[in-house]
Length: 444
Image (cartoon, rainbow, N blue to C red; front, side, top):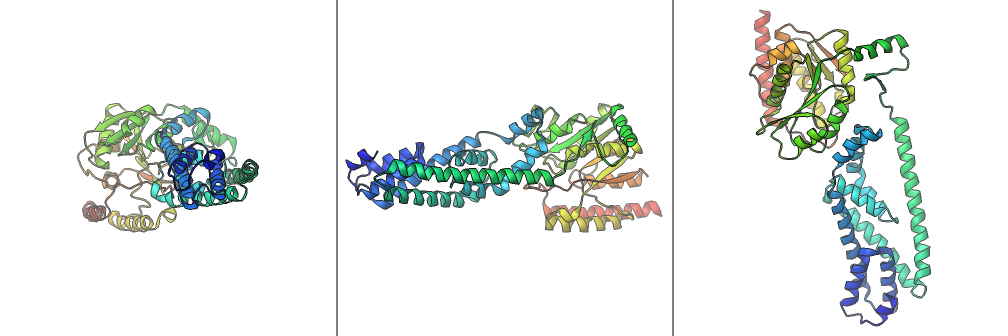
């Protein structure tokens, strides 16, 4: 390419087009050649610089586009077959969403890492607006350094490239070691729940208690996991795969416009689809009707967006086996929620506790076990929106059924809520006031 440049004129557009095309195939070497061309007077500095930068950026967009063709759901479905927990894949996806832009910037200063980083970012659908600035800055910085080296070492471009490549590989190795150390620390800090036959194992408990817990799992449990879902194609497969470890799974696709139903079926769930979006309450009642028709003794409801850990299902099974409650609700730790949700849930709990005339630790949690006799009550037409979960508690109190709360993990990521805040607040106040009046009449 050096010989080619000596035969061209600086004001000709041809060498700059050649540089841009060459950068698509071999970025670093092409940038060095461009610097050499500037040094021998065959290229203008700014056009040469912009040509190699444009070529590299276009190549990067191709790798990003390749990642966009894939889906994280594929890894979520395949991972458990190789011993990779589906929730770990979900956590990895969240970390990439959070740290992807910084990872891309650092990778642009290395050799070999930009391509897998761009594919990963594309695979996770990280919004371009979040990483485009750091991506361009990283490319500009690397191109500036390499074109300067090519300018200074025009006579020995190959030797210069070898030295620069060595430095870049050293940076890459250091970067990889840093990632490895971070992963090891994460695994050491994170203490996953261990399970034996589907029940949590506490090493401090005596073996007799663990034996009883495992025996309870071995006994026939006739329950169903019920998952209402609306446009959750990215997470529903992971949730289904984990939940199927313990019980059969029924997904109610509430008029999704994406591939939620298909992803749920591929993950092994039974799927019922509503023709149009009717709200979470309607989806739950559709599932309740199906569960009753199929003769299940109870259902466990949880969300499809990953905010409920399916590996905590044994906690509900244990509580149900110990003393058959009509409803067991997962209690979240409000202090771990985002500020707005923490305030709304705290106030909502206090308001509804006043309305119910008794402490209600968490009235909005969708993670709950519901007995068959309560399902029979709930199958009757009632609320068709988010407040249906509140109506469950009201029905339980009115019929004198037993309720219990169990602690669960509080998980929040980048999931989008399908709840309209103002509309929900108004409906919740209406339900709370109606509850207060209903229960007051019963007491009187």
